[in-house]
Image 1 (spheres, rainbow, N blue to C red):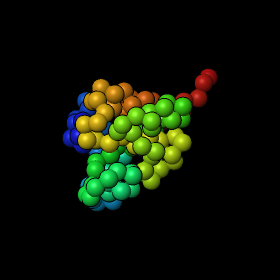
Image 2: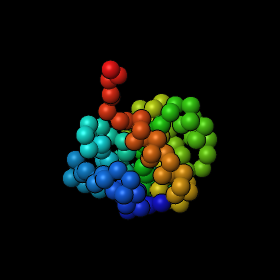
Image 3: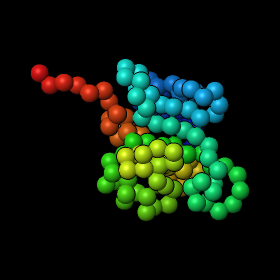
Length: 121
């Protein structure tokens, strides 16, 4: 999956358009009602993720259950969240190392975990 496929998926699933608050290539995915982030697409230096080589890699940060995030970080394509709470967020490389279907499930989970709070009556 790449950046455009992520954007296409969230547009279809949630009606989300990427938001560019820093006026660069970094894009935030927000709930329409609450404006809470459920995803962040960025380019980061390979070294910042502990990867060999020069250049940058595209990533997606998603909110994730801490137990699941811990297990996923042991797999190829997953890292502790770059520039976010490492317990509650997870970084996914968008370089083909993680299957599209798995990324879509994690986007769905992040969307669910960041939904606006609803009071019970």
